[in-house]
Length: 219
Image 1 (tube, helix red, strand yellow):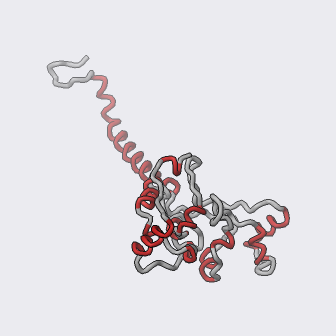
Image 2 (image 1 turned 45 degrees about the vertical axis):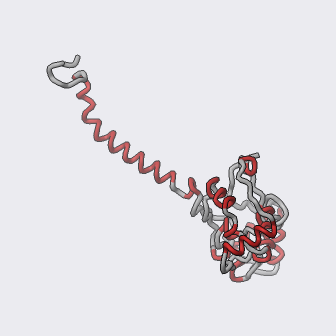
Image 3 (image 1 turned 60 degrees about the horizontal axis):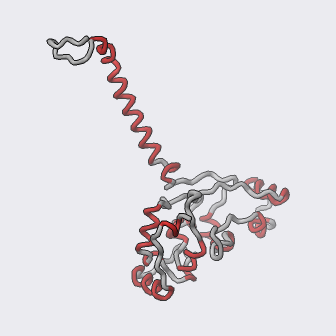
């Protein structure tokens, strides 16, 4: 039992734990560092997430140097909920004639011969409880670059925005700077001289009033 005269309020046997205090402090520090590193890693925030793909497809070359329009490969972006992952047939439109013996394209040739799709790794992946329709944004004049960044300069596609709820709401509350003429939506290098003015004109012409209701994205 504790001795009221000693001024020490705990039993004497608790003295055995004193040597554990440095270990507990060190363990707490290490745990905190690991927790913070995990929270801010690309796998948690997704910013900077750039997985290696089964085929080392370069957007910088195809969309940048060659100038292939986003809609040639992502065929559903103007009309459906998803932009669409390009089918093997789309890739083979060119690669039946180009680089037909390249070892890097072996998975593509195998897919074409077997009929099984290429197992691409999704980069931009919203949670199942989020509803997002590509076509409504593209038709409103929201450019690919607003969400995906300068994909035409990326050797390996990476996520550049959080795609989180607050980020989406910021745009819904002030969509003007993200709006452009529809013919410029997939021109990633283009930007209006006065984004606010251009956006205001497009908002008025198309009567754009993005919803901030929960049901707009959570259905």
